[in-house]
Image 1: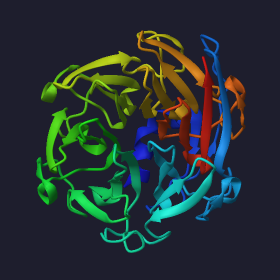
Image 2 (image 1 turned 90 degrees about the vertical axis):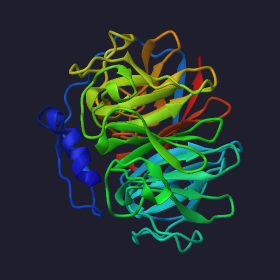
Image 3 (image 1 turned 60 degrees about the vertical axis):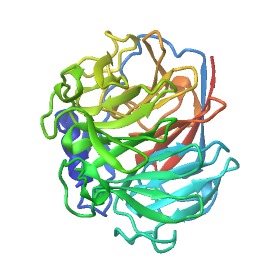
Length: 379
């Protein structure tokens, strides 16, 4: 299902940017790139963004635990950071959840490589089906958007895996508690200070809220009614939203992927568009209204309120300041690869997940490079 989703999301730009070969769920989803000439940047990078590869090796996918470049991933999507600086990765096509220590040691926290399923239990017994989004709460619990199962899973610090909401297999859009709730292709997930979860229910084109008690409601959008309307609650419309992040004040930020925009949702459910323009793809930096994106995927928020976006089909990392200024931090639009370096010299290949640690460092899942990258910022 996810491979078909991504194929659909990129359909409009396939002829000009990519020749994509997508196989059935569980197989390879690598693509052969037909790269246009790099688009010019409207502004130079603000400050310095130094990109390094923390774990994995571009072009060499697999499932190996180990240190740094010795580790292997297969299409990592979601990434989250805990208070101690440990990273957690939804290693999607391996059907596993990985842990990376601050020194770069990679271990498998839950699931078994190559064994998809929906079993709850201990870390070794648990099974996942294309896990994508991942979030961490203040006490170290992890929450997983289990895309292929249409569920949200929880992993305690002790390693116990449970299904928090949804039922494996059936998809839908029903609100309700626990197993009565339904999702359709849940992707991004975020956690607020009170322990509420927010899910980008991608194929339903809605944003869902999950209370600590497991009650699911639809915060914004209307199931399967795609569009780009701003407004409150059910009056708002999204078009395959994927990434979601939460700031300290409880505002949500959504990478509205197929609308090529960044949306903001206030705690009361009021939705506005804060950057990009519907129907106008590109890579332009500048004011929020002038900026352009190309299938933005992941989004993260730092303590100062800056947003960071993986502009997936541009293969760049963008920053949006609280004042609404958009800049390209790293990478060059239209130029894919796997190069460490500063700013425009760095290269990525369809990155998705992104997170920020307490020191302001960024970490991203460089999805089609099968690696985890680190960006050290100096403003």
